[in-house]
Amino acid sequence: MLRKILPCLLSFGLLLASCKKGSTDDPSNQTDSLGAGWSKVDIGKGNQFIDIFFFGSTGFGTGGKNIFRSKDGGDTWSIAYQVELDITNTAMGSTANVVFVSAVGGKIYYTGNGGDSFDSTIVMDTGIYDAFFVNENTAYALGDNVWKTEDGGDSWNLLYAFTPSPGYYKTLYFTDELNGWISTGSGLFKTVDGGITWEKNTSELFSGVIGAIFFNDADNGYISNRNNILKTEDGGASWKIVFSEQDLLLDIHFPSKDTGYINLRKSIYKTTNGGLSWHREVKLNEHDGVMGTIELHFTDTGHGWASGSKGAILKYIR
Image (tube, rainbow, N blue to C red; front, side, top):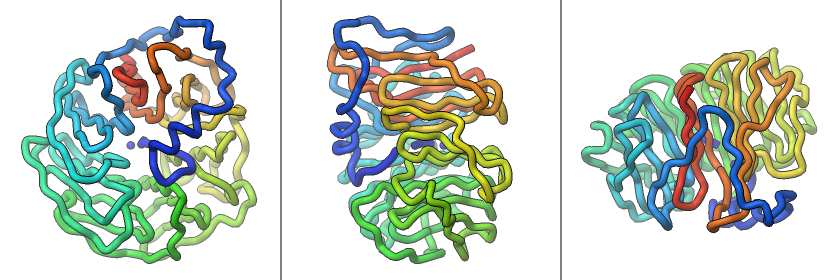
């Protein structure tokens, strides 16, 4: 989903450099604090997953030009494919259908057999920032424009052309084939007709950088707006702040209506009451070159992953 999820900059390299500033963690404390169910998984020194996505026990992690695959729920990883352009985001429609997009150029990589082989297609866009599957074969992708595939990523059709907004990270989230949300440099937009038309949200809350979007259904959803998590229960007609933090809020994932997770660079917080209250489950500290988490992904309330830490990912099993 990731989902996942990131706020403001064109490249993830710049994002990581930016997020390193302003930490309030004590670098003298060398111990990571991992809540019940969380553990670290070694992915090899020097590796770092910018995005992570699972469908059942099959998952993909992407870092730079490498696409890693796991077949055992993230316990072990191997390079499945190497690409020409750095991967920005990953989306899965099934264990077989997976697409990988890059913010540089209009090339979309995809596999239809779970990573045994890969292919690519080119769309007329300056770069594709994010993609999202609504079922096994149908997915949307976002660059300067909105694209749709109905064959697992082999071919893409242009749905809607936005005014180009270079220099901004863009993301999207769909609850079904009709209802979806996107963030561009121009603001937050909603569609109720599958991306054919888009209505801009005029709230001042969304005049700045939007990092992550997650909806449980067409009415109930969450958006990170730099330092706040905002929640709507009426399809975006109104919003309320349910979490605030000085550090950048990077990603959101709710495996159920009430249970959800958000992450900052070095912390992961959990709610079990739909955002009314939060408690910190993970705290990472400055040691061994750790940069912190970027992306969250859960397949259900008992299985989740967080990527970004150099040489390791975090895995959750309860």
